[in-house]
Image (tube, rainbow, N blue to C red; front, side, top):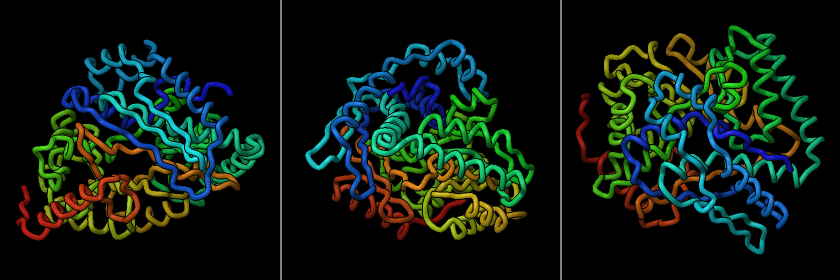
Length: 404
C-alpha cells in the first residue's frame, strides 16, 4: 500500500494551536492516549494490523520541510519559537504500543510527552481507517460510490439547495482515504455559493495545497489535561484553568471555546464576562444543538453581550440538511459556522468506522470527559469518573455565580 500520511502538515489545525500552547506552558506534561473502535463486529486481521504498524513507521520517518514551516509561520497566531521547535520535531515510533487480540480487536496506545502524543492522534486514526477500508472492501467500488455522492452534494450546494452561511471540512480522522478527502475538498473549493461559503478544512496540508483557510482551535484534550493534569486543581474548575491558559497564549486571537468537556452548564460557570468577551465564540460537540445554541445566546444576553457579534460553531455529527436547519434557525440571532466531517469525507454504502483515540491519563493520573450526553467518555477508572462528577455536582449546587 502507498504511504498514507505523506506530510507532517497532514494534521488538524487545532493540533498546532494546542501544540504551541503546550510547548510554551506545559512542555513537561506526560500523557497516555488510547484507541477505541465503537462499532460492533469490526474485525482487524493480522494483515491489516501489520499494515497499520508499517504505515505508522512511515509516518514517524517524516520531517517538516522549510516550505511547510514557512506556511505555518505565516499564520498570524503561530510564533517563531514554535516554528523553530517544529523544525527539530519528529514523531517517535517508540511512543506507540500495538496489540491485536484473538477476537480481532485492535489495541493502540501512545505514551510520552503531551507535546508528542497529542500530534499522533489524528494521523493514527487516518491510517487505521484507510488501511481498514482498503484491505476489507473493494476500495475502487467504495471510491466510486463516494465520488458520486460527493459530486451530488457539491452540485446541490452550488444550486443553493443548502444554506450553510460558512462551513468547513473536518473529516481527516475518519476519511475514507487521503484520495477521498482531497477530492471532496477540491470540489467544495470549486463549487462555491455565497449562501454556503466553503471556508476551508481542518487538514492543514490540504488547506495549503488549495489556498484555503486552515480551521481549528481547541479540543477536549486541552481542557482535560490543563484542568486535570495538575493534581492540585479541583477538576470542576478545568474550564477556568484551560481558558485562562489559552488567553495567556493567544489573547483575543484564535478564540473559539469548546463547551462540553465537563458539561456545558459547568462551563458556563467559568465562561463569564471576561472570557465571553475575549473569545469570539463557542463550539458545540454534543447534545441537542438547537437547545445548546439557545442556551448560549441567553448566556451572552445575561452578560450584556450582543450575541449577534458572537459565533456558534457546530461540529457534532453534521450533514448538510441538519446544518441548513441550524443555519436558518439561528439566522439573524448570531454568527454561525459548521464543521462537517465524516459525512463529507467518508460517505459510501458501507457504514463508517466510529473510531476515536482519546487522552486517558495525564501526569500519571486518570483524566476524563463528562460530556452533555452519555457514551463519549473513555476513562477506565470508574472511581475517578465518580470523583469528577461529584466535584462538578458540588460546585453546581453550592457555588454562587459571579460575572467577572
